[in-house]
Amino acid sequence: MPCKTNSELETFLKKAKHYTKMGKVADYIPALSKANRDDLSIAIYFPDGKYVSAGNVKEKITLQSISKVLTLALALIQRGEELVFSKVGYEPTGDPFNSIVKLEMSKPSKPLNPMINAGALAVTHMIKGNSVEERFTSILSFIQLLTGNKEIHYSKEVAQSEFETSHLNRSLCYFMKQHGIIDENVEELLDLYTKQCAIEVDCLDLARIGIVFALGGIDPVTKKRIMPAHVARLCKTFMVTCGMYNASGEFAVRVGIPAKSGVSGGILGAVPNRFGIGISGPALDDKGNSVAGVKLLEMLAEKYSLSMF
Ligand SMILES: NC(=O)CC[C@H](N)C(=O)O
Image (cartoon, rainbow, N blue to C red; front, side, top):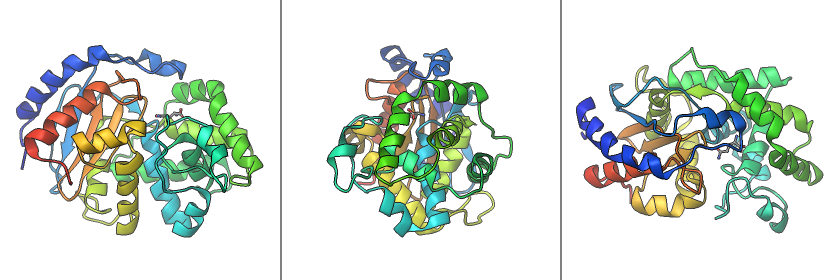
């Protein structure tokens, strides 16, 4: 099994850290611009519940787009495949995550997949509950279960900052409301979505979620099933085809594992049956992926033959 010691992982981290200089911290959500460009940390979880880590593992980041794959799992559990995929499609877009262009061009007018913002908003719309608060509790509890960490909460500052500035997401919602994909109050949906994106985790939490997906829905510590195997499989498939935005093709060639990134610089990776990987590295490349995080995964993939292809 690769990287069984922290010091072995530290060697890779040191090499990858140079690449943080090539990236930029996201600032279109104003609160995210406070992140430190030079940070980089990683944790790897194994099926036996053990883990290794390197860097400042306790550093918290918000989930941002990583939350999309978690709400997809929850919506599939709560609503079933048929309903979920009546509102969102299966196909990668090749466009940036917040692009509006394909929404109008595709017929019927539904988001092409659940990993772009439009698709994720449609998925969050389907989370059950009688109020934003109830629905958010349902998302948060699911994430606490996945991470085995009851301390997980969200950053009010980041949620508020995104809520006040996400006009593009508002426009996606109004477009979908016009076309009958969603039928709720847009401000309420955005309130829920921005809170979901602002849930704070560290890279160990991410790695723990990764191993649950890698094990087909089983918790590595309690050995209990957290989600049905077909839900884990579906989520991992979307992670491969659309998880790294419009860089998913290149990532599949260079790394070859199901992964999901977020503009906070987080990456969640799941190497089927082998590892869960969590990375935090706020400096982003021009597609919005952690520049040093992707480099680190490339190095690990080469050294330990991680690619599933
Ligand atoms: N790519 C991302 O991480 C985007 C998530 C962010 N909350 C948004 O909706 O714009």
